[in-house]
Length: 296
Length: 154
Image (cartoon, chains in turn green, yellow):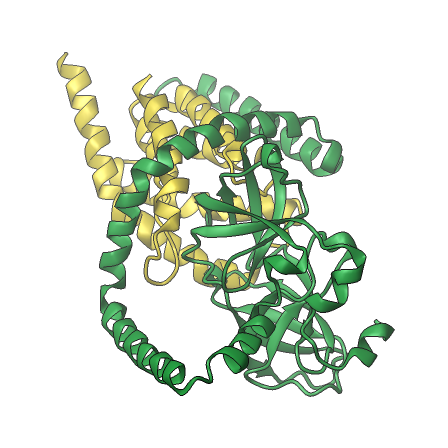
């Protein structure tokens, strides 16, 4: 064994230092002195990532296209079918009213409702072995992004901003096990909480607080508003219920939902940097049964 | 110097490319771990532990990070020491280190009562990562032993 006594001493010192750093970071929380180290790292390495992403993006797209090849044909078929349907509905002249209303209900968020969204690209992703699900995006405090802002894409809710540096920010995805999002069922406004369950964002867990409320497959979950739209803007679609768990004797009911946003293949996302003024608020949530809205 | 640069390159490649690939079964190989093992293997236990510690610290501050600073530093220092010491030949060393690293990460996370360390996570995600990492490891072992031969020759 090569210099094993000295090696052991070095190892002991390093492990102690790591444990001390862990403890300080854990106990100090927001005011942690290590936060500055993290911010410095995010600034320097985030810049490197932004330069690098232009180089690696074509590579990633190429590999992804190979991996997606088996499902591509199915997707083409589905898209062709959808295209035909759309063309038919265009010819029939019934596109505008019905579909536009449905899309608006589904998305819940449009620019003319007073939400200001900054678009961003995902430049890096963290999965295992840190046990966390987070991505790095290429907008930061210089673009008006602050911690605890909603992040979404064209399909639905993605997560919230955790840290920012001048030109990049870290986003905690809703599939992260430490993430909890206030949510409600779109139809009857029953409220609950969406937790991440890992699994690479294929499913999220929805815990309905009222155990007597109806909960069925295909139900849509949207986010539940918070003060000033932070950390989550109200009415952003989260997912669609795939499976309802039988939980006899428990005070809450559990369902598993598939997120609308494809969390494994995130690219362009938007950060909600400004909530609408008070008057516009009402229009944001899907327009169903306003009388219940007031109680909550 | 080459070891440090390759660790940095592996870190960037890990978060920018590898983790973003939608691989089957939802996992990705841990390139940083393999690079630390390989670099430590050529350096010996004490400098392996130092290299592992700083690689882990870098991994802790590399955005995006939502965990506590020091978690990876702890694990990679341990792995660097073990890989530098060597446990009977390269193959057992690599396999043992690859098996040990996620478990140690989970252990440190559990110590800090991290809500992300759960039984389903350990029983489904961790084995997938270990398998992917082991699949990639021959390339890294080959690179490491090759670079060592080159160093002995020159």
